[in-house]
Image (cartoon, rainbow, N blue to C red):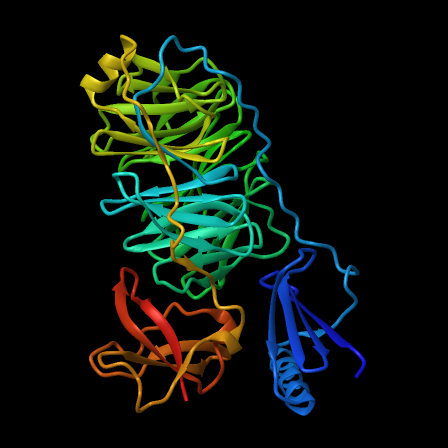
Length: 481
């Protein structure tokens, strides 16, 4: 039997989808390759007992995609999604002493994404790997995503990874799923999320806002380009770019203020009343969220790649392009400067007297930032850093490959305590609402766009009422049959 290949693409005019799906029938084997247009994609193969069964399976997969809007195409005819990775240089530190590093985990690829909470540390790298690590330095789990991780962001309990393929994955369950899709013409630089609303800054200085149901809300083009900073709260979205920081009303009704900075913004941080902008001109500036006024400046010795603060605002931390990390008092006075002992910090967070860094050499680094440890380090006394290793049996979680890959369960076998949701047409759009008792029937559920199908019912382990009047999924998604 001759080998047969069917190549399909879905590239919507609004840019919400830019992906391909290829089915190859070869005797008793059906292979599926899928991913973003222009990329190699991921490959899955299945074998069948007869040629007729293999052909039927291939036809079913093709039919499912055609019904969802995919169409025959020629591979290579449509341009790939534009992806820009930050081009960074990392020089040796000029500090006289090295920071007291407790442990270091080498992920194997340059890392930008970090999130630290009370339970664990998250790190995402350009190979598409996301790891969770305990505060004691034990690797707990790994998520393998289809493309490079731009950044990790948290919204209450939920953790999201924004990837080069334009998909933002929800990592809050064992099986990640695509919660948001970003238009193909948006060259993503950074992401932030607040109450389910996703904010995207891009290479052209643009800002795009998407709601919890993966629908475009509003967009703006700031005066500068290369927008590496976006932070959001209930009042505004704070957008940092080559021309400074611009604040927009959260509902998109207009600009609130603009403040120029000494050099383009390379990183942003926020606290309740202030945003912090790290710039290419060796400075971190603290800006009032209310007015944009410069409240303090923190001078480093090289371009600032990252910054963070302690929760009380007492200390401000910064990482520069020369593999150094700094601590300042709130008023701008430099307290110390130390070498990282590795690469330059591309992102950072502070928690409980520890400073966590992700670096140009792909490491997640835990620094003891207590006053006693820093004082000892400045005298030349530092602990021997533990080199953390992954266990051979480390669990690896990957997103469902396609709607067909979502697990199915019969009504009779549905898990006890599970919550049933249903896809329904509301005003010409596909929504997901709760069927089970005890929930608001008019609230919608944040749910993967790729598996929304009119009338389809799913069972999830649980739902959580999010601020803003919608539900987020907790646990696995299984289709009821």
